Image (cartoon, rainbow, N blue to C red):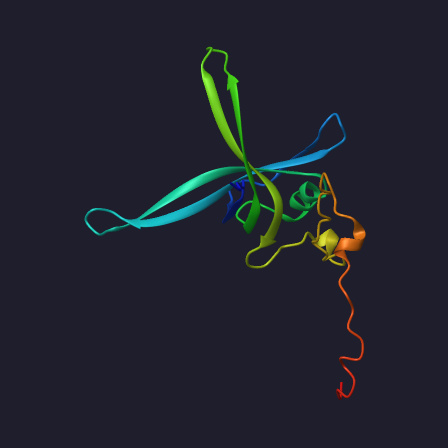
Amino acid sequence: MNTSNFINLIGRLGESPRTKTLPSGTIVTEFSLATKNFYKDRDGNRQEQTDWHRVKAFGKLAEIFDKYLERGGQVSIVGSMRYSKWVDKYDQTRTSAEVIAESFSFIGSAKPRESDAGNTSLVAEPTPRQNPEPAAALVEPVMTGADDGLPF
């Protein structure tokens, strides 16, 4: 049986991203993301429910989030869920959930900072996979002569 840990959220930032560098040198950025659900209650009235999600990103993606995202901005986040358990100071077991971002898309217009007026590239390099496939398996065959006779 195949299983997958995948989440795709579209929402608005509840706060500006907070970025720090870990002792290992890795950059990490965190922020909260609000999503809304609409439903009808028993009486047929439209209701709205807001859910808050903790989002965390690492490396180059964290740098991009820190540079371009701000409170109130709308974004689509694709990633995975991670759950943590710990015991608080009252010996109560607590659980938390966070989304580990792997990619994103701006929804609406991005607002680059004035100091970045000439730099509009927002592409992060993907994180290397544990067991990459050989490069030969990734090369697609090239068709030659397919465009012969076309006017452009």
